[in-house]
Image (cartoon, rainbow, N blue to C red; front, side):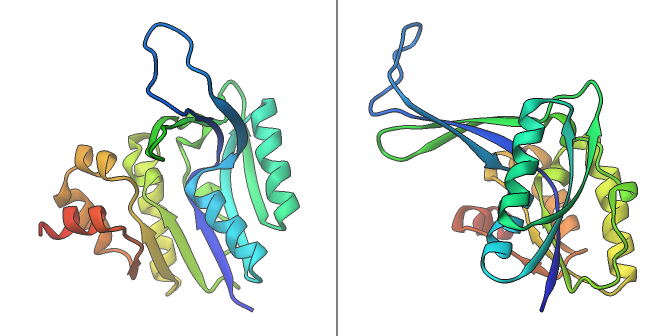
Length: 200
């Protein structure tokens, strides 16, 4: 059985689905739900529920949100090593979904910042790595993630790179994103991301 190491972010998603435009400064009725999120955690959960062994490294705060997302990983059968960061909050993203299904997100990376090689489990036994671009975009974890990539490449592990949303990629700049891509083996892209990276 393949075993995939997922590196990046683990978040608590707070989603508000609204049926009309937001009424600025007043109340707008919404259907609100909470669930575990973050690209790395989502991919690991999907893999685990579809018969692939998945392991995620993450950092959470010493708070109820952190306990909630870790419990969810356990329910999905995801292996994990997580550091509880005192004084930091677990990453949270507010997601607003409008009547057309368009999502607007307000992320707070929280304890996800600062991931580095000390968070890695022994890499023997893994077949590939899934790498969330959010961890490279965040300047607080970028250096540590680049060190992790170097270690993984030395172990001859394939790296699957999911660059992240177009808005954040644009802030970093296409030259830097292409530099990161050169360190990986396979890309997961939507159409907008492909156009941004290719310049076409």
